[in-house]
Image 1 (spheres, rainbow, N blue to C red):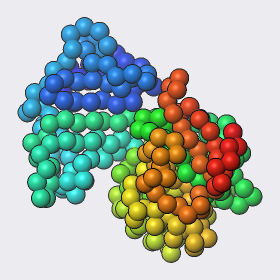
Image 2 (tube, rainbow, N blue to C red):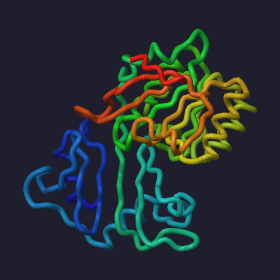
Image 3 (cartoon, one colour):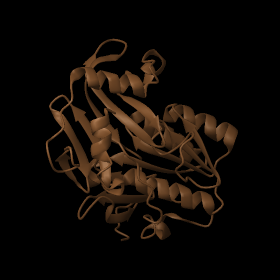
Image 4 (cartoon, rainbow, N blue to C red):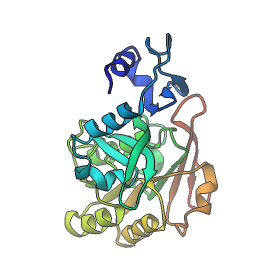
Length: 278
């Protein structure tokens, strides 16, 4: 980051900082549930501006000064930064990459141990867990909740395999606590992680963030058919996920989140027949 952005961020409470958005029109932060211009004094003073060359330089530094080495990520619109952090990238799309970067979104993960306490009893069973789907619009805490589920299920004595496709759950060398019995496959897609993981790691539970398409759903269904429990999340507003995905009734628990009063608000817990349990 340019030093003036670093200085401004240091004036904020990091526990409330969710996103840093860098655009040629200005710099803003998702902070404490709201979106604010980032200013010289944090949220006060003169709003910070940034030039096109600075946006390009941020991506160059984040790539370790080798755009080519991380081009597979960049052409998919993101760059993994480690410790569960991810930078979304916008710009001009070509056949093989994204170039002329115009805006960036850096997401800051939060570890909130115990955030799953109110709903944990609904997903656990004697061995493993019920097949569970966390449904949430962006920014409502689904990844934080999923991370806490993973840690607790792992520490209860389950072998948990995490598909950390975009390095957002905290895999690799991240310092985030995913439990003592957790294995992580980072970078590969869910189909790769699920198929190889079941074959070679023999997990009790598979976990994945942000199911995006029918290929991801197919991987979930194949894992369940192989006798492995799955806990995953999707971006959706309430029951609208049904318009995108057909799980065939295999998801036994549906946890719906919103940001009422702040990220992580639990709207409800439902079973496979849509009976509300909480």
